[in-house]
Length: 145
Image (cartoon, rainbow, N blue to C red; front, side):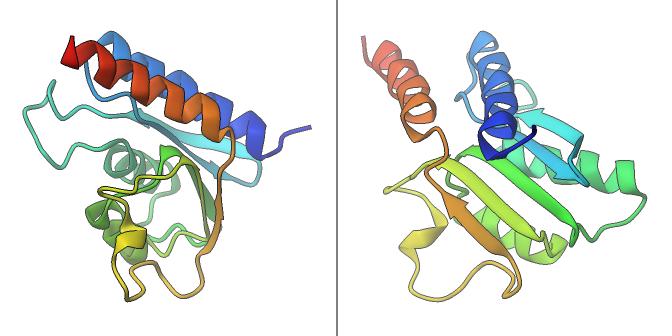
C-alpha cells in the first residue's frame, strides 16, 4: 500500500542524489492518482541557478507529464519545508496537497504571517522528519568541518 511514508522515502532517494552531487540534499516527488509523475532534487550548484530547488524542478516535470500547469489533483512530497519561493510557486500550480518532512525554521514558508500557499492546498508536515532532518544536518556538519 502506498502511503505518505512510502512517497517520502522516494523523495529521500532524490535527496540522496543531490547529496552525491554535493548539492543541499533536498528531494521531491509529485504524485497523481497514487503514481509518481515527477522526481527531482536540488540542482542549484549544478545549474548555477538559485531557483533550481527540488520543488521547482518537480513542478516543471509534473506540468510536462500532465500537459498542463495546474496540479490540483497532485501531491508534492518534499524532504524539507518549502522556502517562500517554492511555496509561492506551489500557489501558482494550485497543488492539491503538500507533504514535507523536516521543518525549516530559518527559511521555511511558515515564517511569514500571511498565507503563501493556495487556499485549497492541504498540508501535512513531519513525515519521516528525523530521517529528512538528519540528512540535512549531516550535510551541513560536513561543510563546517
